[in-house]
Image (cartoon, rainbow, N blue to C red; front, side, top):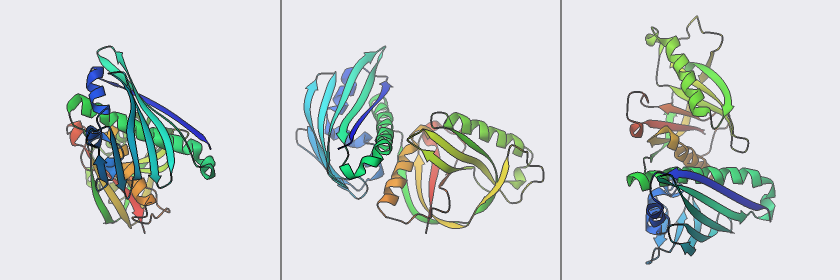
Length: 307
């Protein structure tokens, strides 16, 4: 059976005992779980002593987890059993180490894949690792602020009218995508200064490739137009998104939490709640300008083309 080993870490600005009180109590897991946020209708049963819980949902499958060992304010170890979509077992743990005035929190998993999935090992490690990164970011919110700054609105199937656009296509890394995208939109805004009458909708990004295993991204930052300008610079491009149906999930919160909406979309599509039109790339639109609103109020819509 192919072994799978994952460890992700984050610095939380709180003492270890405050973090420990959250990760040792399953009643508090539901508030920050990176899986339950994308399946709010999932059934969750927490034991009376809050030391174990089980779940069942259409997007998150089913399984159970229980605490097997603890070291006060230092470590919590769990047994994790997945029942659906396939059976597997994992040993999971949190390690807490004081760092400055905060706590370095490391979340690890030791598991294995069914033999027939050996070819997916790197991909699964990347996917689960991304889930752990999302979860740690939500845990940080919850411990530091008492709530998570990420909420999803499942809008379902909608009609997209299509558009022409002027954009900048970029190949970059997942770590640098936020910074690079900011540069691209700054360049586009500068180009459209004095041309506002040409703009016909909200800024968006089209994702041509999102390579979790190698950490690479290919995207186009675009601004929709009602007519194509005659002086488009050589570092920009003209394109179009055709009229199509889309399955939409909206995210409210900082851009750093947007992965929750993307993960929800992928799980909804894998669960066959809609059929994806793979001839058109997924894209996201921004319902407000990050420069004009508080970070926690950003609203971004993730669109997966649907048949």
